[in-house]
Amino acid sequence: MSEPTTEPTRPGEREFDLVLYGATGFVGKITAGYLAGAAPATARIALAGRSAEKLAKVRAELGATAQDWAIVTADAASASDVAALATRTRVVVTTVGPYAKYGLPLVEACAHAGTHYADLTGEVLFVRECIERFQEHALASGARIVHSCGYDSVPSDLGVYATYKQALSDGTGELTEATMVATVKGGMSGGTIASGRGQAEAVMADRSLLKISGDPYALSPDRALEPDLGKQSDSALASAKSIDPSLSGWVATFVMAAYNTRIVRRSNALLGWAYGKDFRYREVMGTGKAPAAPVVAAGIAGGLVAGLGLMAVLSRGFGNRILDRILPKPGTGPSEKVQRAGWFKCETFTRTSSGAKYRTVVAGKGDPGYAATSKMLGECGLALAFDEAKLSTVTGIATPATVMGDTLLERLPAAGLTITVERQP
Image (cartoon, rainbow, N blue to C red; front, side):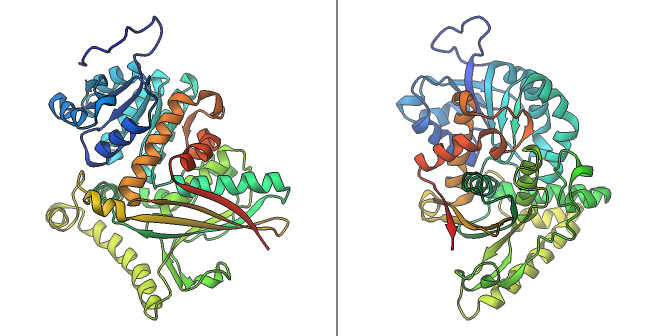
């Protein structure tokens, strides 16, 4: 049920422009706060979740602009609840994860109802299942199901898309290879860790899923049409200068490379391999140039492998209880002061078929997993709701770049992020 809206709904029109689902969670509250300041004054927005009381409390803290927003109660596990929610709005923005555990009914409802959808998932197996189960329904209804609208994977996806647009304008040929170097100050959210645990549990229960999650083209719309480029490892340990002479220090494995790279490759395929049929893409993490940087880089590279392996081993029975005690909980996060102190910079170094080189930077202030992510998610939701004329014709299970790449290149800089593309000598 929801509270009455302030204006009557015209026949055939959806009641809301945008519903924020999961508004009482940690990232949900931050996203609600962002929308309260960024949405048009005439926007018809609703806050949704399981508890009307908690939703009302969130709304009360958002200031005057949000006090007319409706409240909608819906249980993520109830197909009827989320189906009713999807039919009432043009766009659903959801922060309710882990998505493999809580998100499938909502995606299904949006795919059938023709409702645009944006989330924060970083779960390969969840997106793969959405493609297999709901792609045809979303294509038939015209729904745009856009996964990964936060730090995972907007900077990755948009960085490559912006480079492609510049290379196309310059006439320098197709993209052949690109490496994104991430440097970041901020922590990992409890939701991200919960998603990783969920995938580890799924793989332990069904080892056939290990092959899917390890496939660099796991999210491709048609695996048979992808090129055979040999091994494309997500592990890294190298001198930063091996990527570009302007860099110094060392790079190591980036924790989200195994997911972000698959989103970028899906974007390329959905765009008809516009980046290039033989385009190679990888991501690494900068570790600095202090004397101990090589040791740190080696520790990160080895630690990630060991950590993921340990998580998989402990993902059952008593092991789960151990993880519950030592890992951050979903719905938790740092203080506002810590969030403000965070930042991220994603530098993508690209070569084209003509030999041209580009350096693309997507950067922003605020902890990437919280403050920056809520800004990206909020802008993605607003783009889906209010930028119809600027969106691409892509529908179905999509990616940020393929649906709203052009409008995000305008929206995100206006929201305070940096997006630059420069051709290098």
